[in-house]
Length: 292
Image (cartoon, rainbow, N blue to C red; front, side, top):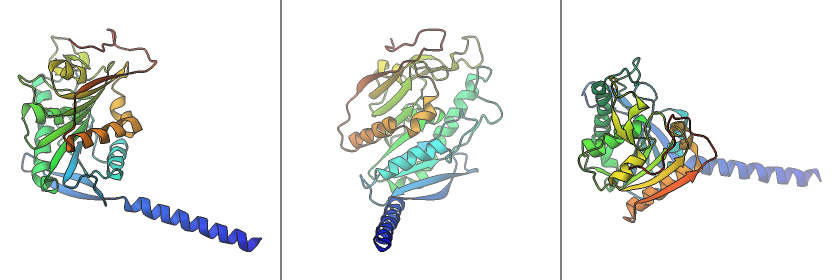
């Protein structure tokens, strides 16, 4: 009896070791450095490299959130999101960028000029990063970001018109409405009750119109209404908290993987989706699902 038990236990331990080894072999993580857009500062990026790429030659560049005054590529939620993409066979470069607003914040007392510059610094660092390691992705690059990171991605796409981006993923992000919207595919997930980055097109943080920081941004709903090529997921009555919480959520991870597959296979089609949750909206105005 003891001998049989020992045999079963040994087999069980071998199985655990094999499974652990397999999990460890799914992807590798390494750290490297690049020079920022100002040509002086050195920034880091984490490379999440799967052993078997789902789409060889393709990759994702990811930018963290944090209001342009905090956050890093090593945030717990950020690493979790990049890890799940790597497990699905998608290489990810998760990068840092210059935080112009450290010690200053990004509120209504910060001038529009300063806000624009903070966004632009990050967008330009995205370009510098792609210049540094974009050769690893000769078939195509999709940029993804959460909150401030998404704003930088969208600024690079629409204001700087970065031609090397084949797609963008925006979680709770927004952009100053451009004169023309590029046809680049976008996956946009946004809470309709976001008090920081408006879901439709409105003033960032809902600042008073006369305030120094009255910067108008189009969120996911605003971009879709204006004609951008978007797969929109509107989370009814959700706030800006989803910009972190959704990074580890199976729903957002699966949507991201599906979107990446659609971009790679050239099968992307714009669409709008609404997810209702049983929560009240804390904004002074009602949560808006259809943007005009």
